[in-house]
Amino acid sequence: MSRDNGAFDMPGEMRAFAERSMEQARTAFDSFVNAAQQAATVAQTQAMNAQSGAREIGTLAMQFTERNIATSFEFAQKLMRAKDAAEVAAMHSDFVTNQVATLTEQARELSRHAAKIGGSGASH
Image (cartoon, rainbow, N blue to C red; front, side):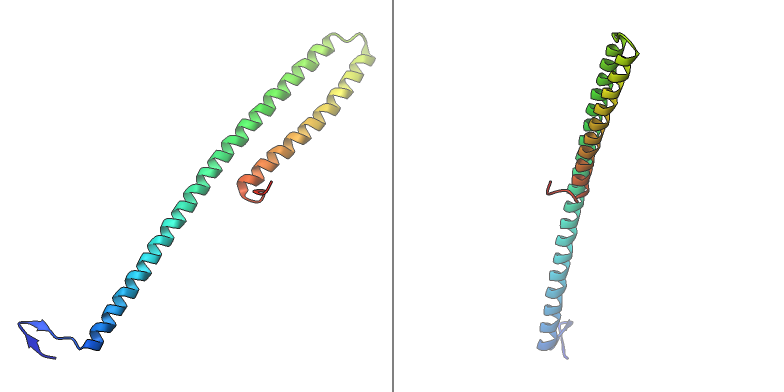
């Protein structure tokens, strides 16, 4: 090792090793940055999808609620026009049967949407 003009003279093999190490470090850093950017993009996309899905489920639930309330008011109006207790009982039986079927289907639809958001029902 000699000194000319204050410069450190590094052996060729050592210089080549240092250059390879720097290039490997740069490649590793670039890979890390790319992976971090991809992870951030995926996380952002998933968050946006979840937010959109939650809004969709909220809208769907409100539609179901409005429909169920309208059906209940219609039922109440029909009851007001009933002629006797037997007709009231028959109307009530029909209403309950229809509401159970409706609520069951609504619960299934909400579950399908929730599964889609969670990723387990993406193929539906």
